Length: 523
Image (cartoon, rainbow, N blue to C red; front, side, top):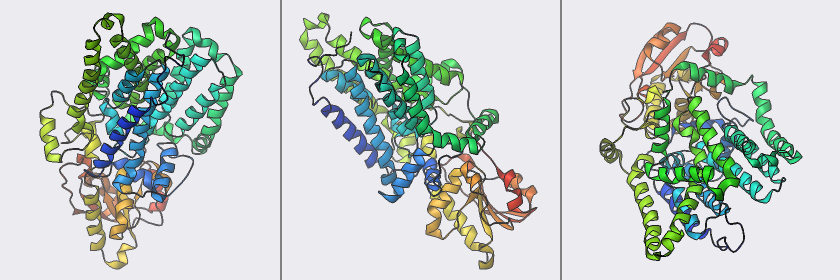
């Protein structure tokens, strides 16, 4: 059994090395925050924060609340916005280290767990975006941590903590339900199923439901827009559906191939080691989660939050191997292998860092990318052919787009500007206009995409419309006159963001009456 007595556990300063690693991680994100630009989703969440509600078409309200807090505290500069996901990333490092400690890791194992928590490249990329994904791993690993404590202590009241974390996680992103359910199934598949037969589990479910109920009620009142959105995405054909082998290979790729032996070893440890038989539910939860997203044709990073548990377990495995009786007779071997393991992992992280953190100029990055022995995965067909991977490409071209819209807007006679609507094709374009527009004196954008649709067409009738992100053929049938008013040629943005800006006159119908047909709920 894993060590549980106080003599086997590290002293009260076990957190020092993880804290140092977390601080370095946080600092690197802050130092590179302004290298490129704003990520598309940040504009949207900031726009949503001007319409506080208990729900939105494509996400629960927590990230919007964080955006509202950001606007009213540190501000909306790039560095101020990225403070929040970088802080969540630092918290992840401490949490995974604490998880390893609960599994029985001593000082080296905890330091290794903290190092492994920065190995997956996908986490670097997500923590560089002001979006809900950076916070997701905290809720997933938090739920698993409570289950681990529940197994060790058999204190059923911990189900209340599980419910609280799961409920708050549902207000961040619905996918936490997959992992929470996987943990429950994992318990049911092991002798620890006895922990499920308690009224405290129902009490914990009640806490989760209570915390989730505002968003649940919102979804009911709005006829489940998120489910409609998911159906639209699946039927659109935009997603690149991976076969099982490719999906699993990309799991290795996004978590860093150097980290694969550690998390896979941790998974085997949880499944087969006699010392970890109490914790087998954690292994089942991981496998069930990966299997779910594989069968559901999810994007490769959807399962990323599940890796915290197996990475922590991997740190325990390596520590035990390096402390085995076989190496006890050769203490110098362990003395060499322990720092060598950490150095090897850190070197692997640094080698791949330009892929996930903008430490290079764009030209230097493109040269680096051209020498990679693999192709960077594309989650959607619309990303194919781009010079940069999607997580970088979506940080370029926004200010240039808004400046071009402003030129078109001010080319209109003054009496026409008050009637001119800026109608965008997606929430990224609309959010960018709402964010950068005030410096140009532009009005708020309108859009049929996601929650922008719910905010309506404002007071516009469609007499004069500046269309952004749509092709000439798409909009021409709906107006008396359509002309190309400006072009955008930013080389690094995605291709569909470089469509010409169109000046449209004479909508065939009234925009207020036609607005229901503008609904465009897709990813």
